[in-house]
Image (cartoon, rainbow, N blue to C red; front, top):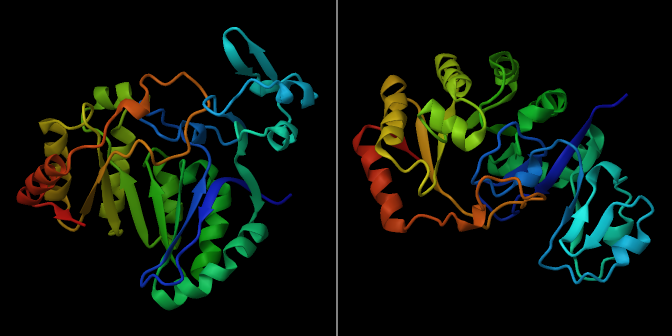
Length: 297
């Protein structure tokens, strides 16, 4: 039986870019970040997504669905995910774009056909294919043969990961990955648990492991006002750079509008209320990291 991946989407490279990049976003993530703008990506399975802002309570979904997935009452529109067969009937019949299915299944040969036009552009430009998500290591059995095939085709590869995976998994991937992009969200382990649902010891250990293995690593540090914009975290990033001078650091501002959204109301916070940092504040943070010896990219 062929291995199937569940993808959020494929973001194809621009044919005009000097160093083009195609991003394949995998569904599934073990973290539950309270600021997450892609909570729908957490489950590996495809899901029916409801946009309550577009809903007009016309009841078409209720009458067209054969599985009693939709219920509309005084409390609003409820979706019973466990009953959904993902046949898309309600999506096709909704006139207001209030429903969609997130997550599409691909066999490896289907995905290869999907990205085939990009490969020539990437090869000529020296660009790369980045596996992201979600969390790509959540579908490890699929990404290993994909990465192998990309390297055999002479394509540069990158893995965009939260680092919360077994070290053995990263070790298996090393021969097939040219660049590791690892999120480093919070230094304090208890705050990390509070914000993401997991402690950060494994992530920190994996970063050290990759650096000790002489891998090309960029530490991706999201700057999230009100959460990780504190001195201890800044010092934690700087400490990594002191231990591993060849480590590169990329500071990213939180963008609440960039993502796939949520299909539930179980988030600890409303991510849309987390505002992006002011440019001056972000630049000050970067300046402090540079002054501490970090190699910013």
